[in-house]
Image (tube, rainbow, N blue to C red; front, side, top):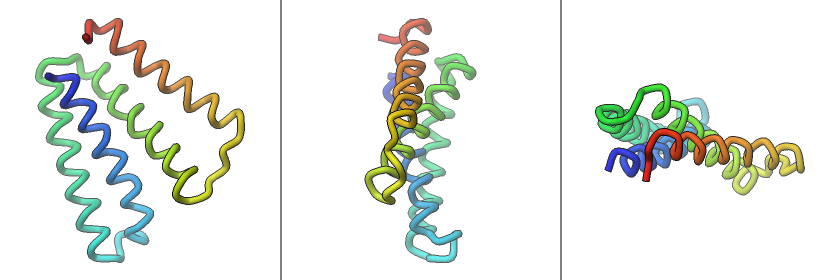
Length: 107
């Protein structure tokens, strides 16, 4: 259950990170509110997950999910470059997340 909470926390991290772009420096009220709500949900779920997972592993996985999702959505939504090297390094993060899951006893 902790891994599921951590995964969902990572999804909300992606949401608040992308929300920063839409909030225009936190000047647009509705996107700012959504960003803050997603941030709070992400932190609460991360806090619940670390009750049963090592903090180092959980934090690395949480930020990794956020980094991969945000970088990927940056390519799709904001026309950020999708170079071969960029995609390679995004995939390295994915392998790191999966590796941490397996070496930490995740199922």
